[in-house]
Image 1 (cartoon, protein in one colour):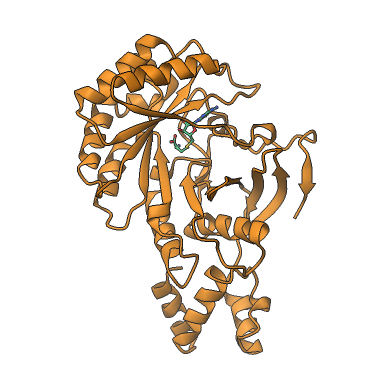
Image 2 (spheres, rainbow, N blue to C red):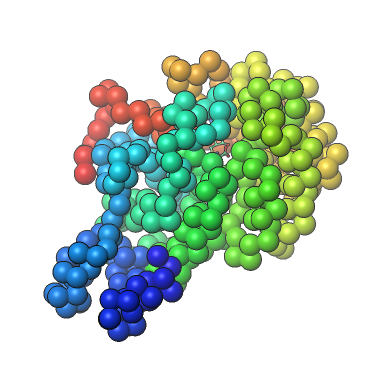
Length: 353
Ligand code: SAH
């Protein structure tokens, strides 16, 4: 619930307005996950809340810790659907990668989450609670959220197919009386749901945008990312150009490009990609090259690091900024495209909570 919705809820219970703020802070700032812990509330009110409301709708089934410090959480909704969240520590800042859907309806050929199909959209609460669970696990309950925690909407699911819940969740997470994670520290990735790119451009306090491209040609993108048959590259790049016009000063947006060995990583592909950006006069963009993360059920292999370097150099020689995304947590199936509720016993399960 937003602060306003929570206020209405407390008024409907016949409780004074200030109680709603107390509970908002308890949930989002202190990150308490049961009414019992809210000892600053009268016992009677706690009992009433217990009867009428839910404070937690996710439970953690298991947690895996990678040799590189990445943590992967396999959670379940109250009605039993899988949700995956990843914590990625880096030297300067930590990042939480959250999911927007249980499973995913898009059938990207190189992605393991796609094999699940769509199970269902996550609610506003289920989106936010992923951060609460991870922050409590990493920093301790009620510990202050370290400044600089970044969020990426790059977990399971297509965020732009759950747009309203996503935007509502981001609004609540930005609240200074809550998690206080402002949209400027959030990046949302879409496979190319074109109408929502136009919508996002109009959102005032909005997150950064990343678009998964993975091919510069329609014939190839149709195969790799079937959503391309609904909105082709021309429609996608036209929307991207419009979005570019809405960027703030100094802001850029990102195209992600999964590097599939022998498929989309040739010199020709790099040249076509640079040409595509030029044709739409896109200048305030950078390309994130993502080495493919493999899995048994996937027919692709990663490009060699020499190939990735060469691809990057070609882009750079044509004036396009390109970066290589270091894969994190591959050993525990936490990396991009690997989130499919895999919990083999051979994964080192450090602690089940
Ligand atoms: N549905 C959204 C959000 C997922 S973000 C989207 O497609 O953008 C996950 C990123 O990982 C996307 O850029 C996707 O293309 C990429 N990805 C998917 N499978 C992958 C894999 N096996 N290896 C590396 N990257 C992958």
